[in-house]
Length: 402
View (cartoon, rainbow, N blue to C red):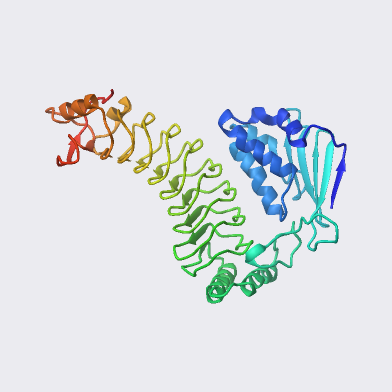
């Protein structure tokens, strides 16, 4: 059921957006608006964890300092809001024990009644488990006890499709042991899984989903997660990432884009996906491994970056390079020239430029500079004069610019 009050021709998300869009930089505004739109119009199956994730995503997207205007749990654990500079609510969401999800913004109020069963003639907005099984908990309630977690996991195990029962049973036992022993690491193994339960052990800080699984999506992630590794699955999307995530490894999936990256992320491995662009990168990122995608440009690179691998993309140019970069692999792109900042790389740095259509001027400059006596630049590998000529590893001493 949906109850509406003070409906107007202006969508509620736009009324709220006009009040808070200045909290976000231009590159994040589209994603922030979409997040607010989802908050105002919650999809079927929305839970409290989803609400937390969406408000945390807004905090991640906001300018430094502006995230303090975005609250979850300000008036109790089921109240979430965005405040203006005068501490007045721009947008709020309140959940109650009856499963009501109430949105209030700029004189507009809408209550979604999230039920477990579909009543005749009433819009279905209950918690939808789909292929992962059924849940005995209300849509907005996360498990609170070991017994409640076990009930969710047992339901997921019982709903196993043919050929997956043994794998699900093994994972359920692993989660039970994890919850009982307080183990911060959950490795589901290569069990041939197509889904995971909607609720994982809440205390884990590291989640490993290796190859030989076939996940197309992930449900909400534990809020304290620090490391997420999902290699060689079939992921086409990722949920909102926990704010404290430090390592994200998702190579060999089918991701066309990534969600907002947490500010504390240090490692991002996403080779072998379908990425066409990247949003702003966290300032402390040290490893960026994104080879074999469809990238045509890169955002500004963080000053702390130490390793950059973007081979087998479609890059026509590179941004300025951090002076402390130690590994740079940009082979098999569309580079015709190189940034002048390449001279700032340390002498022990290694650079691979193989397979790029570097201009004749750039090649000539490279040959001259790397053969000069007394050079002390990075070791650089490039095609000297076409594929028939042996490749050489040389040091780059001066700027190479077209």
